[in-house]
Image (cartoon, rainbow, N blue to C red):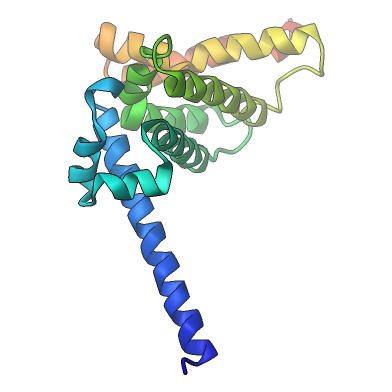
Amino acid sequence: MESEDKRSYRMGARAAALEATRARVIEAAAGLWSRRWHDEVTLQHIAEAAGVSVQTIVNHFGGKDGLSKAVADAVATQTELARQVPTGDVPEIVAVLFADYERQGDANLLWIAQMDRIPSAARAAVHARSLHRAWLERAFADRLPAAGPDREHALNLHYAATDVYLWKLWRRDLGLSREEAERAMRDLLTAIDPRKEHHA
């Protein structure tokens, strides 16, 4: 008869293997969807990239929509971890934000472009906006006014100054170097510091 320790080890190893498979599928799907339209990528494409069967993907995620949600959640968690910054340190805030955008900005824009026809892309975009706003409240906690219209106005300005579309404008549309684009964002964030109004 199998001992308790041996059974616990076997169950733990099985759980670890299942989690590794799940992570591999999410990574494969995220990689494909970062370069191609959502509906161009089939479960078969993802299965081949992950080295699993389509049925395995269905067993883990229930289908493409469930996998899309899992990918969005994984990217959100990764972004949250990558954006740890000291409050009020504008150069560091900009450097960390650019590191994130340089890594996945194009993929983010590709997902945003599909919001109107892909429900999972719309959900991911709404969630990402909520997370970005919460990040702004932490990163600029030293300068944001207390609750009220002035705080909302300041948050809107900071959101516009740090949005992925502004990164796209500078880096992709205008062809600025990363150094030039980071300088532009630093200058913009310095210019909209609401504390300046009280010292004017």
